[in-house]
Length: 320
Image (cartoon, rainbow, N blue to C red; front, side, top):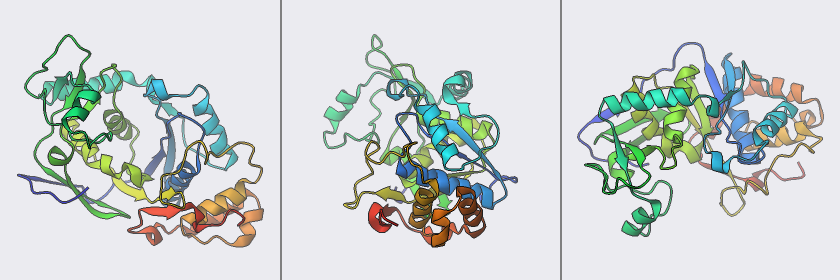
Protein backbone atom coordinates (compact mmCIF):
# COMPACT_ATOMS: atom_id res chain seq x y z
CA UNK A 1 0.00 0.00 0.00
CA UNK A 2 1.15 3.52 -0.62
CA UNK A 3 -0.12 7.06 -0.18
CA UNK A 4 -2.32 8.26 -3.02
CA UNK A 5 -4.00 11.51 -4.04
CA UNK A 6 -7.78 11.24 -4.03
CA UNK A 7 -10.95 13.30 -3.91
CA UNK A 8 -11.79 12.20 -0.39
CA UNK A 9 -10.38 10.59 2.73
CA UNK A 10 -11.77 7.93 5.06
CA UNK A 11 -10.08 7.66 8.48
CA UNK A 12 -10.31 4.64 10.75
CA UNK A 13 -12.03 4.69 14.13
CA UNK A 14 -9.51 5.42 16.89
CA UNK A 15 -10.60 2.79 19.38
CA UNK A 16 -11.84 -0.78 19.29
CA UNK A 17 -15.17 -1.73 20.82
CA UNK A 18 -15.20 -2.38 24.57
CA UNK A 19 -14.75 -6.01 25.60
CA UNK A 20 -11.84 -7.38 23.62
CA UNK A 21 -12.58 -10.18 21.14
CA UNK A 22 -10.01 -11.62 18.76
CA UNK A 23 -9.99 -14.52 16.34
CA UNK A 24 -7.92 -16.94 14.30
CA UNK A 25 -9.36 -17.89 10.91
CA UNK A 26 -7.37 -20.56 9.03
CA UNK A 27 -8.28 -21.91 5.62
CA UNK A 28 -8.47 -25.73 5.52
CA UNK A 29 -6.35 -26.15 2.40
CA UNK A 30 -3.79 -28.32 4.20
CA UNK A 31 -2.23 -28.87 7.62
CA UNK A 32 -1.32 -25.95 9.86
CA UNK A 33 2.14 -24.64 8.97
CA UNK A 34 4.69 -22.69 10.97
CA UNK A 35 3.63 -19.30 9.61
CA UNK A 36 0.03 -19.93 10.57
CA UNK A 37 1.10 -21.18 13.99
CA UNK A 38 2.94 -17.89 14.52
CA UNK A 39 -0.17 -15.90 13.50
CA UNK A 40 -2.36 -18.04 15.78
CA UNK A 41 0.02 -17.50 18.71
CA UNK A 42 0.15 -13.74 18.17
CA UNK A 43 -3.63 -13.39 18.01
CA UNK A 44 -4.10 -15.68 21.01
CA UNK A 45 -1.56 -13.83 23.14
CA UNK A 46 -3.06 -10.46 22.27
CA UNK A 47 -6.56 -11.61 23.22
CA UNK A 48 -5.54 -13.29 26.46
CA UNK A 49 -3.20 -10.49 27.53
CA UNK A 50 -6.13 -8.08 27.07
CA UNK A 51 -8.36 -10.33 29.17
CA UNK A 52 -10.52 -10.96 26.14
CA UNK A 53 -12.12 -13.77 24.15
CA UNK A 54 -10.43 -15.71 21.34
CA UNK A 55 -12.61 -17.30 18.65
CA UNK A 56 -11.90 -19.83 15.92
CA UNK A 57 -13.36 -19.61 12.42
CA UNK A 58 -12.67 -22.09 9.63
CA UNK A 59 -12.67 -20.18 6.33
CA UNK A 60 -13.79 -22.94 3.99
CA UNK A 61 -15.56 -20.93 1.29
CA UNK A 62 -13.05 -21.71 -1.46
CA UNK A 63 -14.35 -25.25 -1.84
CA UNK A 64 -12.12 -26.24 -4.82
CA UNK A 65 -9.07 -25.71 -2.59
CA UNK A 66 -10.45 -27.22 0.63
CA UNK A 67 -8.77 -30.47 1.61
CA UNK A 68 -11.06 -33.05 3.19
CA UNK A 69 -10.39 -33.36 6.92
CA UNK A 70 -7.97 -30.43 7.00
CA UNK A 71 -10.21 -28.28 9.20
CA UNK A 72 -10.48 -30.94 11.90
CA UNK A 73 -6.74 -31.61 11.65
CA UNK A 74 -6.02 -27.92 12.26
CA UNK A 75 -8.23 -27.97 15.37
CA UNK A 76 -6.41 -31.04 16.71
CA UNK A 77 -3.05 -29.37 16.11
CA UNK A 78 -4.15 -26.24 17.95
CA UNK A 79 -5.34 -28.37 20.86
CA UNK A 80 -1.98 -30.14 20.93
CA UNK A 81 -0.27 -26.78 21.29
CA UNK A 82 -2.48 -25.77 24.19
CA UNK A 83 -4.73 -23.21 22.48
CA UNK A 84 -8.09 -22.80 24.21
CA UNK A 85 -10.80 -21.05 22.23
CA UNK A 86 -14.08 -19.58 23.37
CA UNK A 87 -17.43 -20.80 22.08
CA UNK A 88 -18.21 -22.96 19.09
CA UNK A 89 -16.00 -23.09 16.01
CA UNK A 90 -17.60 -21.18 13.13
CA UNK A 91 -17.40 -22.56 9.59
CA UNK A 92 -18.05 -20.17 6.72
CA UNK A 93 -19.68 -22.85 4.59
CA UNK A 94 -22.58 -22.83 7.06
CA UNK A 95 -23.11 -19.05 6.85
CA UNK A 96 -23.98 -18.47 3.20
CA UNK A 97 -27.32 -16.70 3.92
CA UNK A 98 -25.43 -13.99 5.84
CA UNK A 99 -23.17 -13.29 2.86
CA UNK A 100 -26.12 -13.27 0.50
CA UNK A 101 -27.93 -10.74 2.68
CA UNK A 102 -24.85 -8.48 2.70
CA UNK A 103 -24.58 -8.78 -1.08
CA UNK A 104 -28.21 -7.75 -1.48
CA UNK A 105 -27.66 -4.75 0.79
CA UNK A 106 -24.76 -3.58 -1.38
CA UNK A 107 -26.79 -4.19 -4.53
CA UNK A 108 -29.67 -2.04 -3.25
CA UNK A 109 -27.16 0.75 -2.73
CA UNK A 110 -25.98 0.50 -6.34
CA UNK A 111 -22.55 -0.75 -5.28
CA UNK A 112 -22.54 -4.05 -7.18
CA UNK A 113 -22.17 -4.75 -10.89
CA UNK A 114 -21.81 -7.89 -12.99
CA UNK A 115 -18.52 -8.62 -14.74
CA UNK A 116 -17.90 -11.17 -17.50
CA UNK A 117 -14.12 -10.73 -17.67
CA UNK A 118 -12.00 -13.81 -17.19
CA UNK A 119 -8.59 -13.71 -15.51
CA UNK A 120 -7.03 -14.57 -18.87
CA UNK A 121 -8.68 -11.57 -20.52
CA UNK A 122 -7.63 -9.22 -17.74
CA UNK A 123 -4.08 -10.58 -17.83
CA UNK A 124 -3.94 -9.87 -21.57
CA UNK A 125 -4.76 -6.24 -20.85
CA UNK A 126 -1.82 -6.02 -18.44
CA UNK A 127 0.54 -8.96 -18.97
CA UNK A 128 2.86 -7.93 -16.15
CA UNK A 129 0.09 -8.04 -13.53
CA UNK A 130 -0.83 -11.68 -13.04
CA UNK A 131 -1.15 -11.48 -9.25
CA UNK A 132 -4.51 -11.84 -7.49
CA UNK A 133 -4.37 -8.12 -6.70
CA UNK A 134 -3.84 -7.04 -10.32
CA UNK A 135 -5.64 -3.83 -11.32
CA UNK A 136 -9.17 -4.06 -12.70
CA UNK A 137 -9.69 -1.37 -15.39
CA UNK A 138 -13.48 -1.13 -15.05
CA UNK A 139 -14.24 -3.00 -18.26
CA UNK A 140 -17.80 -3.98 -17.27
CA UNK A 141 -18.54 -1.06 -14.94
CA UNK A 142 -21.29 0.23 -17.24
CA UNK A 143 -22.63 -3.19 -18.21
CA UNK A 144 -21.22 -6.63 -18.87
CA UNK A 145 -20.16 -7.10 -22.49
CA UNK A 146 -21.12 -10.78 -22.59
CA UNK A 147 -24.15 -11.80 -20.55
CA UNK A 148 -24.10 -15.38 -21.88
CA UNK A 149 -21.02 -16.15 -19.72
CA UNK A 150 -20.77 -16.88 -16.00
CA UNK A 151 -20.70 -13.49 -14.29
CA UNK A 152 -18.75 -12.36 -11.27
CA UNK A 153 -20.07 -9.58 -9.07
CA UNK A 154 -17.76 -6.68 -8.25
CA UNK A 155 -17.91 -3.97 -5.62
CA UNK A 156 -18.03 -0.50 -7.16
CA UNK A 157 -15.11 1.34 -5.54
CA UNK A 158 -15.27 5.08 -4.83
CA UNK A 159 -12.31 7.39 -5.43
CA UNK A 160 -11.27 7.83 -1.80
CA UNK A 161 -8.17 7.15 0.21
CA UNK A 162 -8.55 4.71 3.08
CA UNK A 163 -6.34 5.53 6.07
CA UNK A 164 -5.82 3.51 9.23
CA UNK A 165 -3.28 3.02 11.99
CA UNK A 166 -2.04 -0.53 12.30
CA UNK A 167 -0.75 -1.27 15.79
CA UNK A 168 2.52 -2.69 14.45
CA UNK A 169 2.87 -1.39 10.89
CA UNK A 170 1.92 2.21 11.62
CA UNK A 171 -0.02 4.57 9.37
CA UNK A 172 -1.31 2.87 6.22
CA UNK A 173 -3.03 4.52 3.27
CA UNK A 174 -4.39 3.21 0.00
CA UNK A 175 -6.63 4.49 -2.75
CA UNK A 176 -8.28 1.22 -3.77
CA UNK A 177 -9.74 2.77 -6.93
CA UNK A 178 -6.24 3.66 -8.13
CA UNK A 179 -4.36 0.56 -6.99
CA UNK A 180 -6.87 -2.31 -7.21
CA UNK A 181 -10.05 -1.07 -8.84
CA UNK A 182 -13.48 -2.63 -8.45
CA UNK A 183 -12.94 -5.97 -6.71
CA UNK A 184 -14.83 -9.26 -6.76
CA UNK A 185 -17.26 -10.07 -3.96
CA UNK A 186 -18.90 -13.07 -5.64
CA UNK A 187 -16.89 -15.17 -8.03
CA UNK A 188 -17.88 -16.40 -11.51
CA UNK A 189 -18.36 -19.89 -10.07
CA UNK A 190 -20.94 -18.50 -7.61
CA UNK A 191 -18.74 -18.68 -4.52
CA UNK A 192 -18.64 -15.67 -2.20
CA UNK A 193 -15.26 -13.98 -2.12
CA UNK A 194 -13.04 -13.75 0.94
CA UNK A 195 -13.28 -9.95 1.16
CA UNK A 196 -17.05 -9.96 1.67
CA UNK A 197 -17.27 -13.00 3.94
CA UNK A 198 -14.56 -11.86 6.33
CA UNK A 199 -16.15 -8.48 7.10
CA UNK A 200 -19.57 -10.05 7.62
CA UNK A 201 -18.15 -12.67 9.98
CA UNK A 202 -15.93 -10.28 11.94
CA UNK A 203 -18.90 -8.04 12.64
CA UNK A 204 -21.30 -10.89 13.42
CA UNK A 205 -18.79 -12.37 15.89
CA UNK A 206 -18.08 -9.01 17.54
CA UNK A 207 -14.37 -9.01 16.66
CA UNK A 208 -12.77 -5.87 18.11
CA UNK A 209 -9.23 -6.42 16.80
CA UNK A 210 -7.97 -8.46 13.87
CA UNK A 211 -4.49 -9.88 14.46
CA UNK A 212 -3.09 -11.62 11.37
CA UNK A 213 -0.06 -11.81 9.07
CA UNK A 214 1.33 -9.00 6.95
CA UNK A 215 0.43 -10.93 3.80
CA UNK A 216 -3.15 -9.78 4.45
CA UNK A 217 -2.32 -6.13 5.13
CA UNK A 218 -3.16 -5.05 1.57
CA UNK A 219 -6.66 -6.55 1.96
CA UNK A 220 -7.55 -4.25 4.84
CA UNK A 221 -8.53 -1.12 2.83
CA UNK A 222 -10.93 -3.16 0.69
CA UNK A 223 -12.45 -4.68 3.79
CA UNK A 224 -12.85 -1.23 5.34
CA UNK A 225 -14.69 0.01 2.25
CA UNK A 226 -17.10 -2.91 2.60
CA UNK A 227 -17.50 -2.30 6.33
CA UNK A 228 -18.42 1.31 5.67
CA UNK A 229 -20.82 0.43 2.86
CA UNK A 230 -22.58 -2.17 5.03
CA UNK A 231 -22.68 0.07 8.11
CA UNK A 232 -20.44 -2.28 10.10
CA UNK A 233 -18.08 -1.29 12.91
CA UNK A 234 -14.42 -1.38 11.95
CA UNK A 235 -12.21 -3.45 14.22
CA UNK A 236 -8.67 -2.40 15.06
CA UNK A 237 -5.86 -4.13 13.15
CA UNK A 238 -2.48 -5.62 14.04
CA UNK A 239 -0.50 -7.21 11.22
CA UNK A 240 2.25 -9.52 12.43
CA UNK A 241 5.49 -10.04 10.48
CA UNK A 242 5.62 -13.02 8.15
CA UNK A 243 7.86 -15.95 8.83
CA UNK A 244 9.97 -16.45 5.69
CA UNK A 245 12.51 -18.87 4.32
CA UNK A 246 16.15 -17.87 4.80
CA UNK A 247 16.24 -16.38 1.28
CA UNK A 248 13.18 -14.20 1.96
CA UNK A 249 10.61 -16.36 0.14
CA UNK A 250 7.25 -17.06 1.74
CA UNK A 251 7.18 -20.34 3.66
CA UNK A 252 6.21 -23.46 1.76
CA UNK A 253 2.98 -24.71 3.32
CA UNK A 254 3.79 -28.33 2.57
CA UNK A 255 7.43 -28.27 3.70
CA UNK A 256 6.73 -26.24 6.85
CA UNK A 257 3.63 -28.05 8.08
CA UNK A 258 3.14 -28.52 11.82
CA UNK A 259 2.39 -32.22 12.26
CA UNK A 260 0.59 -34.08 15.00
CA UNK A 261 3.66 -36.31 15.26
CA UNK A 262 5.40 -33.47 17.09
CA UNK A 263 5.80 -34.81 20.62
CA UNK A 264 7.39 -31.61 21.95
CA UNK A 265 4.80 -28.86 21.51
CA UNK A 266 6.43 -26.70 24.19
CA UNK A 267 9.74 -26.72 22.31
CA UNK A 268 8.02 -25.75 19.04
CA UNK A 269 5.96 -23.07 20.75
CA UNK A 270 9.12 -21.77 22.42
CA UNK A 271 10.61 -21.27 18.94
CA UNK A 272 7.47 -19.39 17.84
CA UNK A 273 7.79 -17.07 20.83
CA UNK A 274 11.42 -16.46 19.90
CA UNK A 275 10.39 -15.54 16.37
CA UNK A 276 7.91 -13.13 17.98
CA UNK A 277 10.88 -11.67 19.94
CA UNK A 278 9.38 -12.49 23.33
CA UNK A 279 12.58 -14.13 24.71
CA UNK A 280 11.02 -16.98 26.70
CA UNK A 281 13.25 -18.59 29.37
CA UNK A 282 15.13 -21.67 28.17
CA UNK A 283 13.73 -23.91 30.89
CA UNK A 284 10.17 -23.43 29.60
CA UNK A 285 11.17 -25.17 26.38
CA UNK A 286 11.27 -28.50 28.21
CA UNK A 287 8.24 -28.15 30.50
CA UNK A 288 4.47 -28.40 30.10
CA UNK A 289 3.04 -26.23 27.33
CA UNK A 290 0.57 -24.66 29.80
CA UNK A 291 3.50 -23.20 31.77
CA UNK A 292 4.89 -21.62 28.61
CA UNK A 293 1.50 -20.08 27.77
CA UNK A 294 1.16 -18.76 31.31
CA UNK A 295 4.52 -17.02 31.06
CA UNK A 296 3.90 -15.77 27.51
CA UNK A 297 0.51 -14.19 28.30
CA UNK A 298 1.95 -12.30 31.27
CA UNK A 299 5.03 -11.18 29.30
CA UNK A 300 3.36 -10.45 25.93
CA UNK A 301 4.80 -7.32 24.32
CA UNK A 302 3.89 -7.02 20.63
CA UNK A 303 5.54 -3.61 20.28
CA UNK A 304 8.98 -5.24 19.91
CA UNK A 305 7.69 -6.22 16.43
CA UNK A 306 6.81 -2.67 15.39
CA UNK A 307 7.62 -1.84 11.75
CA UNK A 308 8.76 -5.43 11.11
CA UNK A 309 7.30 -7.10 8.02
CA UNK A 310 9.37 -10.32 7.85
CA UNK A 311 11.20 -12.66 10.21
CA UNK A 312 13.59 -15.22 8.64
CA UNK A 313 13.04 -18.81 9.70
CA UNK A 314 16.70 -19.10 10.61
CA UNK A 315 16.40 -16.23 13.10
CA UNK A 316 15.88 -19.06 15.60
CA UNK A 317 17.97 -22.16 15.08
CA UNK A 318 16.17 -25.45 14.54
CA UNK A 319 18.12 -27.00 17.41
CA UNK A 320 17.03 -24.38 19.98
